Image (spheres, rainbow, N blue to C red):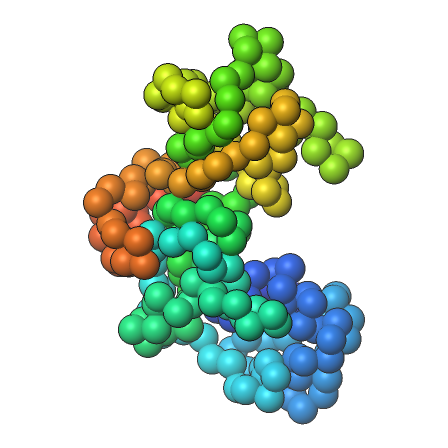
Length: 243
């Protein structure tokens, strides 16, 4: 097999996202054939080179795994937390394969979260060009005006860059109403920051759907494997089998 960038190999094999793989490389935690790799442009042959991360020999996963978790509030979406908070990995300990979460839900948010060891699948889900919709139910401490709804949907300034067009509709009338929000990007704390920009605070946030996949009746901390039909449908939408 031809050589390819190391971060791409680590991502495809489910060791880490490409970004995290690059961080591991820059920290000197990746070795190829006994030599520490520090350059992000370094390449390796996935079939013949000895690849190690933090001293552990890395092998190609024997089977691709795809599962859905109902993330509860009060945990972080990461494989390891330096502050020793509870992570979402606590709820998938029964899975023998090495997997990692696709994207993030913040500490105070809950809902649908996907896991895999298929790096190409994870990158395709997260890629803005594939326009995979993420649907959220959001409770806030006040009602948006028609002008604010228009601003929300057109996009607001966030960290120097305007958010992509979104959709929002009122789900429940109340002093503290619920809205349904549809996004095609997933920037850090995006929904909370968007409402805050418009003068409102998010009280509760739950992701209910990713693409066609619904959270359904999956209980908090519960997970299930995606069916073969669901995986095939995702791969067709993401055009993975045409690459």
